[in-house]
Length: 186
Image (cartoon, rainbow, N blue to C red; front, side, top):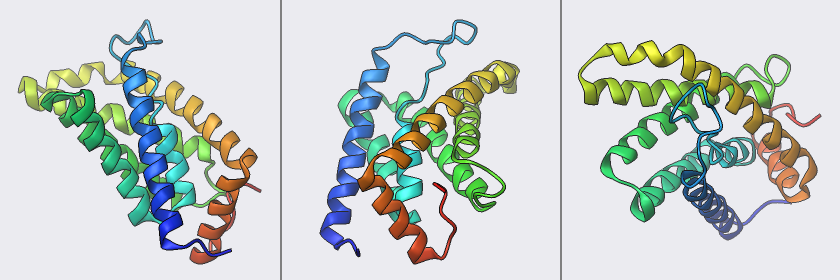
């Protein structure tokens, strides 16, 4: 079944709204990683994973961009905007790049894990620019571990939701039929 442009627009808006709400709620939750102060689970990346596997690139990019901008407008500052912008887009483009390997070489969980690590790398790059010191990257091994753990958890939940929620499966199957890909949910 081909989705109308209005259905896609509503779907994009719904995903972006969910990501904004998740981002705001996550700001209220203390870090689950005692070994990595300030590290978060990155739960809004769950919506990014769903968008990547259910929408064409230009639309999934819109979901990420709207999430970052609206979250900053609702409850952020310029510095948190910079961290989110660089981390979010680096994560997004890394996941798209790894996705090219295909479902026979990498899983949704693997793609999400790469996104988690690259998000942390992007945020450290912004911190290095603000601090005017590359020594900030000494924190990368700790953030890599938290990125791997968080990316795995987000990918696991994303894989589960994509395979169990019928509407998400419909969008996924339409995406793969339009792009001549192999299904990631088989």
